[in-house]
Image (cartoon, rainbow, N blue to C red):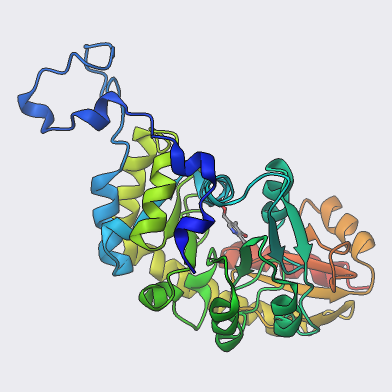
Length: 346
Ligand SMILES: *Cc1c(COP(=O)(O)O)cnc(C)c1O
């Protein structure tokens, strides 16, 4: 793989917007900043934020054990994914591969960017159909999306399958690790040096408990990160979010502790669900949710809604007929859920 051939021509030829803070970023204490047309009166937020989020990235670099140069941050992983499309996929020409049932945003972003999506469904048991994926790869295949642990099934995809695809793909492979903190396996971040075509995404929205601040993380080679940096909106992570995300990372232990509670609640719920007569199957989960096959998903979904409990009905997804997805709540919330499930146990 040569990255040069994967970058869209217009992206390769363009130069980035050079912001005022880009051209001159020095210790704020000692300089008089009259360069960016900001209001000079201090509000704590009158200045533009750091376009490259240096402080936040240093903190992330420590917990993720990866140099800052290999990190890009986006307004949620959704922005990160969109930047990847825009950097590497030529509209109306290129293709991506996704493996349903999986996260819906890959296909939405492909449609938005006018890129064809090749669907290679997961096999029964929600594992990758490696042969089909490999035989679907053409010279137009720029991106292959692998979600592990997968949403909505909850399971990890097999490491050897992922490595096999990384080796066979002539394009880039994106591993979406939004739920990796809930899993037994560790992140593919430690494999980045071995696979120049690997991109990993993670998020502040799930284990790190900050879906509201919209911060997504991307880990990849310095080359890939520099291409994405070139095309990203200069101030894509606002000052409030940078500040909050920095605090989150500094309190990492708190969230790891919550993850342990959520994981143990997941196991408790799994056992309790076995006593609910209309829950027919509980799929193995390495995430903060459980996918369950029920007798009639639409009926049960509406029954729960009447009791003011909202779950996700996935019945229309591949391999998910009559499946509901339950997010793991706090111990108190899960107790309410269990009481309600038992009440409507008929
Ligand atoms: C929730 C989720 C995300 C997170 O997206 P953000 O834009 O960072 O909130 C990413 N990928 C998957 C598979 C998810 O389920």
